[in-house]
Image 1: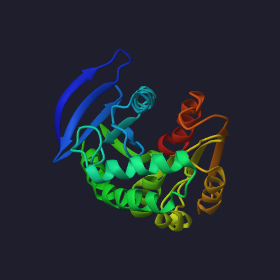
Image 2: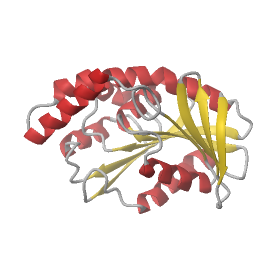
Image 3: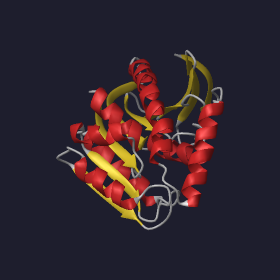
Length: 240
């Protein structure tokens, strides 16, 4: 892991850009060390510098967590993929037209999840070797990747998932193998994530401790106070 730049914020958070081979990422760390780690994965297509992601990361770091994210292939600082961009455009067109989207979604997102898994596991190993990170490890963000990581990566102790209506078939089948504590955020009027599918997915998780927070509004309307509730969730499982 090679650190490229650093920025000190007024709240005591240190923000550093890093490269791990071809993988670019950002790490936020608090003034206290060592700190528990939260892997913050954005949904497919978003850059790691998306303001909403950065805001969540800064908030969590100020609460005493190390927070890390990386750009997925074709996103952010990584070379784009014409085929993936075309598939995303076709997915948006079909959703707006009210047409079936399952097969388009599977062909786009299924491979992205599988390709992302080894990169996140590589990043996790490199992050845990840093003296300022002590574990345990939490996950926050993209549901499909979170399910895959929770099943494959025993170092993840708790996870917060967003939305969850459209999740590849492979991850829907894996949901029963997820047994770590979960916080599941659902936007009740999310046009991009069918509500009933999200409810069915929540029911399928094998975790003995799982909590759903449902709020009115669309996909990007998650209330800011959910950050505070999420912080209490991670405090229970990563700091106790």
